[in-house]
Length: 227
Image (cartoon, rainbow, N blue to C red):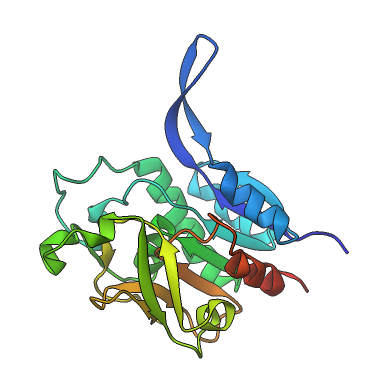
């Protein structure tokens, strides 16, 4: 049986090789490794024109919206915050169109960290631009933390009702997008996981399931991607 082709969005960063420094579309190897271990064939997607999105969605069996720089607050009606890194406009525009098209086409999607925010915003949701202002602590900026998960959700069926996860973040979900449901929470009730009920697999998580040894969420994505 052919391996499912899994598109992975890429980081847009300055990269250096030999004597050159150039803007480059790059990806932490952990994403490709997790997909390969789960039985998929990873394909890196550079942030190009949104005109390419329809062709990508037709050609892919699944999609991972990867982490990276926080998305532009203009996409969800907020003013820029000087504490947040400058947004990557080209990447934002491409991934916003890609997330919308993937949901519309019922393409299996696993949205990770920044990717979860993009999935939420693509469906009309909003974000908390600077999380410490709301929760009055900075625990979300540390890597390891405990979460509670709805056992009836796709996330819960993959990893159980509690987990210790890896993923520091300074933004979070404020208002859920249309059709989205919260399925995982930190101890201060900040949303850590979202899903679209009825979709083949449209899941967003605040942490990084591609890191470490627990690959069950990526394996669940592969199961949804297979005919």
